[in-house]
Image (cartoon, rainbow, N blue to C red):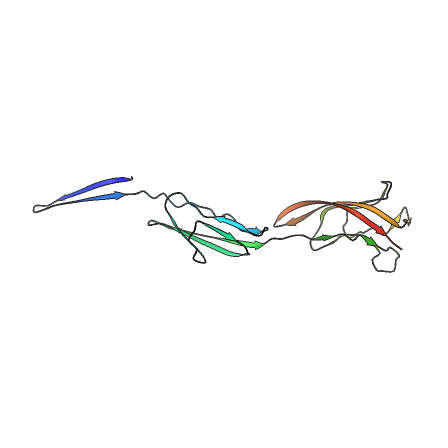
Length: 190
């Protein structure tokens, strides 16, 4: 218990007295959290705990918080006169799936730029693609991202011009699914 205490020791020859102050230090409790991703320019780690404690981060910093601006392994030691608790967290580069949609293609069957489909550096799940003419008629639909539009409609070459496309798909970024809706125009040239 916190408080001031007096201690008296009596012997046959002498009496010894002393006062002592006792301060209760609660257990050190903090949580850096699970390994995470640096998706913005900075990440804020907070190791603050209740009660009195000192802090020592991997680079010698002694504040209860730490600002991260690059991926890596970060650790903090939180300690007082009674105990020391060390935690570590791994910060990874943010994963971002880039999907590129062309705005012009030439479906002339020469083997170059003959199909309209997305280019991506990651898998596209639950994929849907629809292409409409300028009157809103559906001219192409697919659930396979590699099955691009070949510029035909009902077995005939589609007219040159601009068509509207719409797509929805799911990507996995930072171990989490993200649904994306995208749309735009695609111009057919021959």
